[in-house]
Length: 328
Image (tube, rainbow, N blue to C red):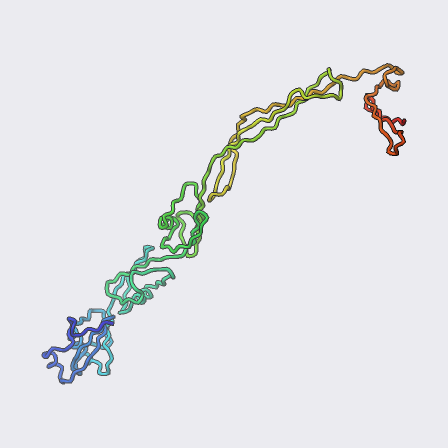
């Protein structure tokens, strides 16, 4: 509250000419409240409110309201004369909304209530909420909301006035690459408590070398007996280059796709030669180590008993694949 006194331009004591027109010489002090300014003037007890306003050099415009009518006598009980100014206030919001409200006297909070606007926890004004209104005042409101922002794997809580994802990215100076991923479209609207995830996506091509195992090929020779074999060529493994397209999300491998492969060293096959020549056979009853059936003995293995007697048995394998046993 501001008190106007003799140091201010406004009059605190009525001029003699005005006092003469008010009747009695008894005077009294009257408080005139005009918003946050209170003017104190001395007037005759039977003077009117209009006289007190004139003494205070205060003008009441059309639409303004007085707590006591101008033609009534000033209150003798110390009650102040209150001027409620008709204030037309323009309220603009950062979302593009704008409206003009009329408030008698009042403060910024009264204008917002008249406009039906409720401030959010993080909204800001260009005037204090308890500031007194003046005619023609403009109140600007910036709406802000809390958003959870996850970028490069790091989580940050931000208070933003952005209304869309694109505005938020611009506000936070965040660049989104062509391959990066957004959890919301750039044109999507933001609401309080939203979470926006930005994943950095990089695609690289890498080359790896892989061994090619050699194959084993079989050849046949009639210069070797059946059951015999030999390696005529040692196998050597080959090599090939594999090119992959690897996708990394926030620095971690997410996907790996094979895009091409190239043999850089051909494998050398291993060649095994197997015999096809049949063992020669004797006539029945001949001295060929056979048993007179035309078959021949391929092997004769001596086996001893475990009792230390020196006795045992022979395991005899014939050319036709049969096996017989003979004690000794």
